[in-house]
Image 1 (spheres, rainbow, N blue to C red):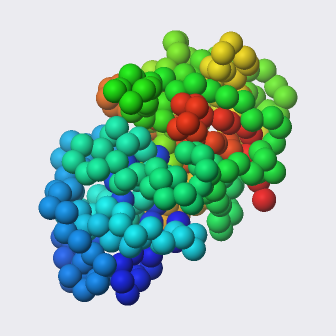
Image 2: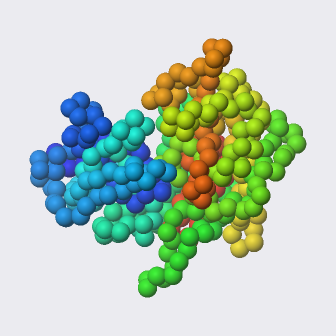
Image 3: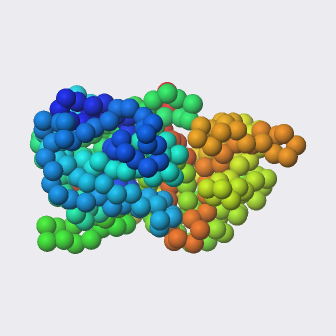
Amino acid sequence: IEVVVGTPPRKFSIMPDTASPFTWVPSAASPACTPHCPLPVWNPNASSTAVDIHAIFSVSYGFTPDNIMFGEFYNDTFGIGGVALPQLPVALVDVIDTIYDAQTWGIVGLGSQLQNRNVNASVILWENLYRLGHIRKRLFSVWLNHQDAKEGTILFGGVDKYKARGAMKRVPLTSIIQTPHGDDFTEWSVNLTSLARRIGQAGSEESLLRTTYNAIIDTGSPNMYVPQYLYDTIAAPLNVTLRTYRNTSYVPCSLRSSPDSLNFTFAGKDGADGPQIRVPYSEIIYPFSMPANLGEVRGEDGTELCYFGVLSNNGSGIFLLGNSFIRSAYVVYDADNLELRMAQSRWA
């Protein structure tokens, strides 16, 4: 999403991340790219509205503990969608190789304010928008659109029912805890009750889950991360090629035209039926040579191989549904009601 930081404003295109509370942009001295780091650059010392709040940024991303990035927080003017927030905590971060290579050049945190350990709760963008009166409800809606689309939308404070195909269904969060200020949540996780492989548009379904799972719905990840047994079951009929480099999976690109799909069902709120989201293989399997940072991959016989957006969680215990799932859903993240609402996406 497009944002501006500082005075004078510096424009960035950064990734929305519903699994993180922190907003950051890269330092020009980042070890992954110096001395040729991409522009623009935000220099708090050159911003007339920046205030050093003496808070350290230290965050690990992904499933590798040593993927830690360091930086420092400043309060500064932060603009999004034509709205200027006068003092949002933004970290200036030294980006490491794995994050830079994944083409992540900044993040806006949309997670839980309880994930925040060292900066005040206004670090959460949606909370800040609410407290300053820019939105009336503490919610935001995500529509990523289909894989080949050039853009999607995030709507703060509202729901665009025309982006959804059918009725939105409510799903309670599974991370609710009691705090001195009432119930709150620690992450955008919900109960996944069923996952089935459907053969064809209206063919038979094969159940794949051994049990139910708390699934994090994470816009900050391009992939789904599932237990090893489930990954093996999904991958078995697809002739998957594993690459130990970056733990990536590839399948023949011809499978992008397959009519098969993975169908996800979630627990409904208050005993009601939950949403079912159909994710076609064309949204799970990336086009040839994508993601761009990984380049072209071919089999030994020259067959074009395409990146497969489902990976093993390597025993981490985390069940995460990233953008290879979210593109097929319209998702409302509702902090007021401690729930998600979901429906099948109506693609443009």
